[in-house]
Image 1 (spheres, rainbow, N blue to C red):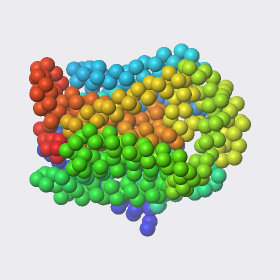
Image 2: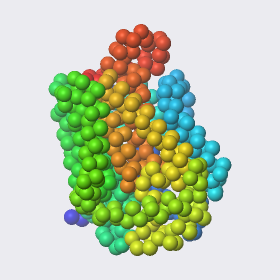
Image 3: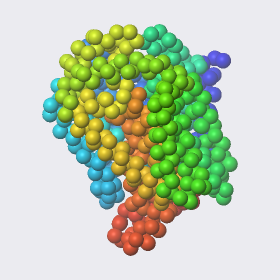
Image 4: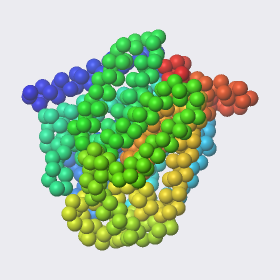
Amino acid sequence: MNPSLATLICACGIAGLFYLDRDKTIRPSKALWLPVMWIWIVGSRAVSAWFGLTPTGPNAQLDGSPMDAAVFGILSAAAIGVLIRRNRRTRTLLAANWPILIYFLYCLVSVAWSYHPDVSFKRWTKSIGDLAMVLVIVTDEQPVAALKRLISRVGFVLLPASVLLIKYYGDLGRGYDPVGGAMNTGVTTNKNLLGVMLLVVTLGTLWHLTTLMHAKGEPNRGRHLLAQIVLLTFGIALLLMAGSATSSASFVLGGLILLATRLRMIRIRPSRVHMLCVAIIVASGLTLLFGGEALATSALGRDSNLSGRTDIWAAVISVAPNPIVGSGFESFWISPAAQNFQQKMVGYWHPENLNEAHDGYIEVYLNLGWIGVCLISLLLISGYRRAVAAFRLNRSIGGLMLAYIIAAAAYSITEAGFRMLDLIWIFLLLAVVGASGVTAGFFGGKGRKILASRGGTTSRTPATHELIPERVSVYAD
């Protein structure tokens, strides 16, 4: 097929998906377009890359792109402006998520001892944009509708566009890995970035589809189902095409948790969700204990050293500048220690391709030391507890938040997931903050009733009254 004709068909298909998924009865704020655009950029390529203006040269990693800085700065400033107008709701969520605030504050303090404080500080300001976008979603007056629209708007554009680029624009949609193997990249720049984009979008689509299947009386349910089935099909097909083992395994894990929370035995006894998560951890541990590591890695398309990752982990930990406080926020890979380390690596990981530890926990250790690892652990543990509490109040939303948290924790074992401008990090923050929103009554449904049964009223929690959506029956089951 002619690429121009394929582009026209793709554009019509995207328009058709938006048309099928339209719903005039729910009206999220127009500010939702800010996180949508943010995730479009983070989930594909930098704006400068689309225009062929990617910085080059020895200082490209330090200087960055003025165009990208301007785009992210404008979006961040606009989001912060929205949050200032929603000050009561924003304060409620920030106060409830003190582990996130402590983590970001420590990241800011660590700028002081980074090798390039100016670069580290600029990166920290971008990381604030990630949190601001999450808060824009959760503080929406109809947060469930906002979350649904966010996932659909991102998926309707990025997934069909990825298929188009892979099939008809090979110079953009396909590439080669460091050893010369062909890989599909879609709208991103490598298969792992494509995989993580598909992970978060497809997991959210699976949640949306399951809620629609249980909402028998939902208006226009048929066309909404059709749109989500098409999107889920795109997601699963692209996951297979991407060949990103980590993202595929994390999607399967998150999807199993999401579907398991729909089982009657867990719905009638929410406490059993702990047993579910423990069972997954124990099963993984037994696999390793009884020599199943080789079988598991082979099933995921990895070799016994996880495509060279174990070699990186063993070598990079030994060169960490400071095991207690690290090298400073997002600073290790621009420090002399990293440059010396990169020159020593040979084989699959060439120096120009080695700019992360391929393990989120080790990456945090390199940049923020053991203090950072403890803070990330606190964030994950508190997020898990909040998600379980949210599940008790709202099975649908709580199940999704739990799935995102578990998927992010698993993904970060073999990829650097706790990094700014990384989709799995953004959706981890969304899951933790969203779970707090459920327990605060922001998502309506049972959460509001339980607040009332405990003696709370909407006058004591002003944000609750403002955030109850008009229609929550599809999600608050």
